[in-house]
Image 1 (cartoon, helix red, strand yellow):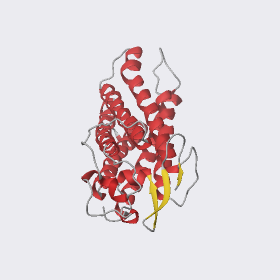
Image 2 (tube, one colour; image 1 turned 90 degrees about the horizontal axis):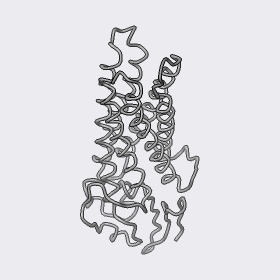
Image 3 (cartoon, one colour; image 1 turned 90 degrees about the vertical axis):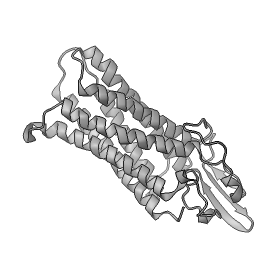
Image 4 (tube, helix red, strand yellow; image 1 turned 135 degrees about the vertical axis):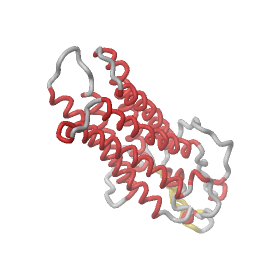
Length: 275
């Protein structure tokens, strides 16, 4: 058996079983992709590993990312098209945070209930009690998804508190900037964990691999969210107007990265083998 992965995790295995060459990848295994190629019955699959589950999870991410992208655009053009600033635009961001959180939970639920690796493909279908959140620190997929899920919850607080922002700068930093920064940090950690899980190492360049593109553009989006989160700090007094503009621009870039990744994930699900 040949195995690979960023230490101490194993995310790739290649081995022969009953005369067949089996290739096991942690991400594909967790999502229920390419089951027939691994000798698994494509008709016997839990609902959280179905094509529909993966596709609708991607759709929810796409909706959330689209609303964040829309909110970012509105911050630049509200004066030209008559959209009131701040509160109404922040409602758009809050609306985007809801499908993000739902999709984050669905992805974490999937990772929490993925079966363990077993060389005998049939044994991989053995499941324990279904868990809502799970505790699987030995799984990169679970670590990535639970980190992202908590990050989406932080953005729920960040965007909701911004709808009717308090007047004092330090209260804004405590109730709006801090949750946004925490969410951005968690997104960045989650994005890199997902990237190294798919890369089977700490870095890779696989432009011909759809799964690699999904996690790569998501990681780029996480980096943009991180810079936006840092720049969104509210100081005591006036600040140069370009800081807020750059923060909103990077927020839009992050949303665009998430949107592309979500659309690619929907395509991956639609193209996957049955089950």
